[in-house]
Length: 283
Ligand code: SAM
Image (cartoon, rainbow, N blue to C red; front, side):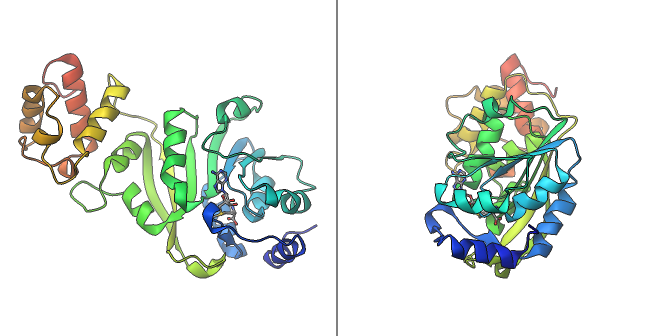
């Protein structure tokens, strides 16, 4: 059976499927957008694609034609008959009906062989950040992430120091990935139509990454620095060795009255490494 957005609507209707706002269900019905995602993701025949929230399978169907395998996690079991019908000839697709956030994704991945692992998905917007944090914290070995997200959230991902969208998350992401916007997406390509604008962003794992001596400490330092966004570094980092931090800030043209939102990834790396070594350094 050939896939088409019209066919998708028919299948959904035939199975009496009701969209659930609580699961962030806004399905893509514009084939051009699906094709654009596939084209921009540059999937190779040895790529395993991890898709979070296949929905009715519109993106999944086309991913399966270019990837080695597609592994999906879908929370809504009501989509089972829909996905079974749409993907019945697709031997390289597996759908796990579990909450991605609590699933043992690494264990599932261990049964696959692949050269590269990509995440390609139109994410459920209500859990965009937890999904990305899970990928990072559980060290899931993704080399590229191509995702549709709410525009405002995407702006935060790729924000620069000194801008209103800059946050601890911007720094975490910047540490691991080159983040870039691929395209804007109109509300009209989804059913039901969402209230927010969307963008597709790409996050490519950095090939060369500045080394942090103690990653756990580095992440804690960043979280604490942004604890109260309007407060200075001096006030947010009271429990830290302020003398060393002050020396690093000075080298970079700042003092302890600076706010975290002004500081780049490189400065945070300098601070974390200097404190780890107990000296002021720029390694
Ligand atoms: N990929 C489909 C598309 O583009 O048409 C659907 C995208 S829709 C924005 C998000 C999907 O994520 C829904 O199918 C929803 O049921 C699913 N979902 C929501 N929360 C989830 C979770 N915690 N784990 C796995 N899937 C989830």
